[in-house]
Amino acid sequence: MRTGKGIAARSIAGEARRSTLVLTFVLMLPALISLALMLVAVGLFSSTTRHMEQVAALRPMVAGDIPEYIWDAVSGRVSYDACGAEETLRQVNSRLDALISETGGRLELVVTRRTMDTLSGYAEEIRRGLLDGTPIVEIEALLDEIRSVAALAENMLSDCIAQEAEAAGRLTRQIVRTAALFAAAEILLVLFALLFSLRMRMRLERTIREPIERLEKVTGQLASGQMEARAEETDTLELRDLTFSVNRMADRIGELIERNREEQENLKKAELRTLQAQINPHFLYNTLDTILWLAEDENSGEVIRLTKALSDFFRISLSSGRDWITVEQEIRHLSGYLAIQKARYRDVLNYRIEVDEEIYGCMILKLLLQPLAENAIYHGIKEHRGGGTILVRGLCRDGRLHFSVHDTGSGMSGERLAAVHRSLAEGTEMPHGQEFPGHAGSGFGLHNVDQRIRLYYNQPEGLHIESGPEGTTVSFDVPADRKENA
Image (cartoon, rainbow, N blue to C red; front, side, top):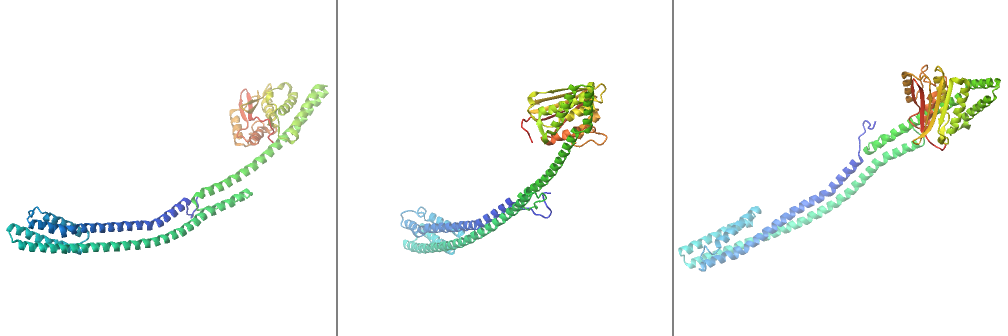
């Protein structure tokens, strides 16, 4: 299983992501706070400066313009309505009202606004006096009052500017202290971030290093032959699949080693059965009886030919312990065997060998064709009334050697042929009493030939069998190689 009970998964990417987020937050927090405070301070400072500018703009209007405009009307230069005093008073009062609203009712501005109301009252008296023809002396007295009140309002505006300047100074000093405080906090947070990053780095290294060290230890044990070694399950998500794969690989290697051991044992058994089949005492007795019968019949030529065929048969069967021989040697071995059997069965058995001489130099696993011919004789020709013919063909096709052994015997039933195919596909022998042709009574038979082809040539397919009323054909394909494989 990939996941174990009670093991909480940790992701390397997740750990790195969390560490990055924490560090980013820690380092950005003071900067964000400083930025926010700076924006607030800049806003306050800008508001204070704007107020100071607006108050400073009102001073000449209050102390200079309004008395000047009223004097022009009193001296008769212009009419009171055209002098501009009323408009100027409205502008000053309007700006003062706005400033009082923005500053939250600063005392100096409130008092100045009330003073401007007094000034407006004197201006109204002058306007009525001019309309009613009040003596000039009384009007000039009112003008002096206007100048005094305007001067008082100007002083109040000056005080207001001084208060704003003092507030701006306090704000500047507060900003400097705040900046210093946050600079110190930033330094502390950087130190904390360094310590935190160091701790997280060590944690990440441990998260990665320990599982990898365990995997390295297990792979080393596997390499040294300790196939029972397995890696412990890790809580690191990215390495969990790797751990599972290593353990699965170890299981698979163990299975392959066991399978290889079984295959080697099967090969040894097949080779032993092959050798035993070639030294079959019944075959040897029958052959020697045939030679003896020919000798008694004074057929010396046939005796010599069979004796040479028997000699070639056993010499090539042994092949000095070699597993690979040339196609030419395999054909000589087959020819010797068929010649001996022909001498025994005479007209019952005929045979032809049609193999391209171009492939004679190719290497082939020895003792593949003779067992197929033996199977054809004992389970095809002998059981067929009137005998029959064995045809052996060999050629090179698409870089592979193709051989077939066909007999004109009675063939196999569909049920028996299906059983043969199933047995070969499963790599198992037929149950006792249901042996397919060649397995019982004919040496090592088709089963061992099929097994040797699959194992030695490392290919999924061995023998291919076709059978019908006109006989049986057994064929196989192997790579064409002119160098010895073993």
